[in-house]
Image 1: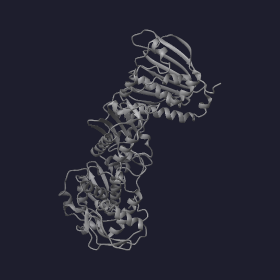
Image 2: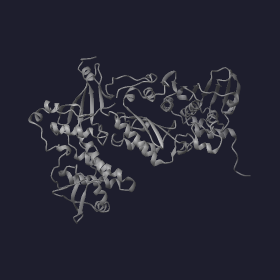
Image 3: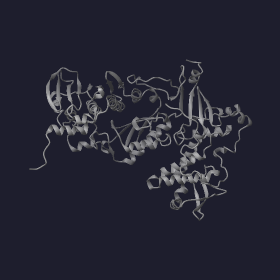
Image 4: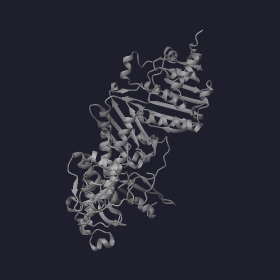
Length: 632
């Protein structure tokens, strides 16, 4: 007698259900996707006990007649595809015909549905995959599905469910994604009788973001609008102050489907690389529209993981779409000062007022909020550090100037006695200077703590961190010259001799062209030593040896491969910029401040240093007046 047998249909269905139904959120996802595919303009979801005991999804979509309602629970019953070729041009969210069968196999399901053409609807009740009752019913046009006692007949699956609050959180997360995927549909989520989400369905994505994440998020986002021959990209990119500690606030949609893709996440991270601090992830709501032939959504039963063809082109398109949005946005961070008995400081949108957000309250379609959380401590001189280089003796050289363009050098232009004493720029200097730009157009009030530049604008006060600002300027100059393959080096009058290890010498011999492209020129000096002839022209000459060792250590740690040379080079430029930028506690003259602001305004993105720290923060006049109790 053979040992191989055929499973009965009930057992097979329960096993297969595990591929689709993992938890209550999986049920909600499949049912809401069916509602969206049915053309619904409003979808309401109600759950109890995290969806374990009760889930109801109601829509006003096309509904089904009695024959279709009967077939809907049969395995692989679908109206979405008919042949294998249809898999390569899928535009619906569901298509394999597994969802209803899988859900019904592990729960008690009741379906009420009616088409608009029919005056009478249908009611079907199924327990554990078995049809209990089918009969006519009076019901509104559309479909209502109630799922009770999930996994009641599969206790092994039931015991893996989490606490009710955890399961409810997963349901809420998937509903938030739907709201962001389809701002033209009004979504409602009720948890144990409490409405926790309600979107207007007015086709305005910013309103949906407001409903899901609140007013602070809606104020601090930049619009994405980009298209090329491969793809159309639209949505919103969060400003750096919205960055979080995980990817939970990154929502990516491909042809309306919420997906996860390493390619897309990599493009987002690369676009924000110099705008965020380490281990922070951008807030992004990203819609991608492209030919379905370029996307494989049939990679996984849940259809959340996808693959692209033309990966390199799509990566470039996403990168440019996000970078363009950030460059066009006002990235100066707003400090809001709350009133009341305790004054509170928090990051918010420019000109905004603190408001408590309750999901369910949404703004009108024409929402136009003005352009976070946390605080900033005193400036850190070297956020990136210098791994492995501490304590190594290095001969020095002469000192270079910090600002070269326009003749404004940090050591060439000295502050006046009045400026040295007060940190304030003379009125005549201020009157003579009115260039356009986010920074240079503002009135220069002076400098405080020899670290922060004070600017006055219309109804606002801006503080600029001189080190972070100059760091961004130096980094962008070095990067630009590297990519343009223009000369980066300046010769050293007193070239230092640096002793190295065997592995360091070997790397320098093998990658001399690469280090030359970074602006370093050196020659073998024998006895495991090199003589450093030139360094990048932006760098402080007196620290040239130390800087070279820092860069060498970073390159050695990262390893140089053909695919990462640009990344390694830019990491080196981060370090060069940090070491070479004007430091805190350095008194600047009026001309030096003007030069710094002019150069800052010439950059595409001047609002953070290369490590993601803010270059400037803004206080509104109204907030200051509330702090001093001039206003309530």
